[in-house]
Image (tube, rainbow, N blue to C red; front, side, top):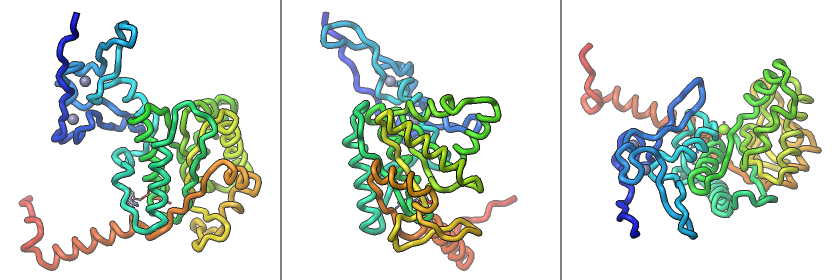
Length: 302
Ligand SMILES: Nc1ncnc2c1ncn2[C@@H]1O[C@H](COP(=O)(O)OP(=O)(O)OP(=O)(O)O)[C@@H](O)[C@H]1O
Ligand SMILES: [Mg+2]
Ligand SMILES: [Zn+2]
Ligand SMILES: [Zn+2]
């Protein structure tokens, strides 16, 4: 029997909600959750279920995820990333390098995504190093998202400082270190942002980082990292408010630093603070509209 002719999945590129991705993120209990966009209900292939029937090489009937965006497996991967709210729509294409270091950084990020083979072990990881607002979190989150979408890679984003407080909570509820480490160990790609940023208990912070790095290393899975603390010899300095400037090596200790060196390519992401620049652009626009109100948006009647 011949298979019925399948119509291509609709490309709702004009959908105002998802811009053609077929999924959107919503916030539930402080976390970002991916769900099928309403436009995927009209998908000619799956009717919104996200699943289609096909045949494998031997002719057996198999259930596949639909490409329209409603595929429940893909949605679960996107939710599992635990992306911060501000970074759900980032992409590597949207990163606009402002200097050669940044161009190299985004090229390295892209190469990691392109070359990543799910379940291959011993992949070299990346550590993005740079001052505030140069796009390190942008790169980490965009990599995780693209790995999930293009290669069904199970990833997870963690901010080190928040992770520390989750771990403390876990301990106070009687969780063992094996229990809190397991979800961090088992994902294909883990991203830990802002390493070195901690509180007063440096011994505890270094211990946590050491355990995570070890457990990931033993599992043969890469850990992407970012930090504000410079590598030795860098031309910039960083010290959180009220702190003296330190290098990453001083901050995490030389033992962890040397392991990071062994496991990761250290990638400088230096440049001006994008947040500050955006703020200045907004201020300039506001000032311009105040100075010539006739060209600005009309005030609404209240
Ligand atoms: N080169 C760039 N092109 C486009 N957007 C950028 C670029 N650099 C930064 N941004 C945007 O600027 C904002 C700040 O960037 P991000 O938070 O990634 O910086 P960061 O290096 O992680 O800073 P911090 O060290 O303070 O955590 C984000 O919204 C990000 O998307
Ligand atoms: Mg950041
Ligand atoms: Zn849509
Ligand atoms: Zn579909």
